[in-house]
Length: 225
Image (cartoon, rainbow, N blue to C red; front, side, top):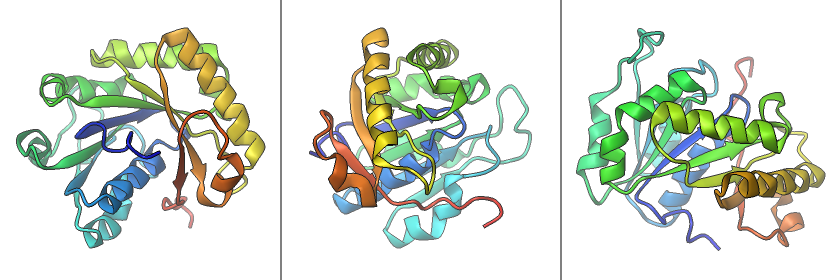
């Protein structure tokens, strides 16, 4: 069940530091390539200096995609420098796009900057949730985060992604526990669960989860790797 992947032409990805937001964004871009869509991945995260999707530029371009990256200059400004190329996502109705946005109120201001263009294009916002991170390890904390992003950005979050992991140590129990918490967040917020992002080697072992399982590769390297 992969109809959710290209259910919208533009998809905005938000999530706390450590949620696996960027890994999910890169995998979604690769999934769009697999479906034969012309695509671009916009790295607009002005908050996290590590795990930037721009690190995957070569891979994205090899698949026929385009990497749009924000400037790292003046990242502390109220409105950090944004690449003019991002408007190609709004102006080209044939181009599918993934926008990787920073996961705190500062990052959400970038989302607010493009709010009207995103709404005009029917973009959706997906929030990546990792139940193994201290800022989102309960449904109540995750709900507060969701509401804070909505308030800062002026946009509603349309779907939740369970990406509960412990990097290379992730096991089935992590995924299942995350699925349970994601459902609790869904009940609290009224926002549907879209999918479970699961490491490729575990995907077959959790195929009975209620929502689609999205097998992901681990592309992002730690700063010391």
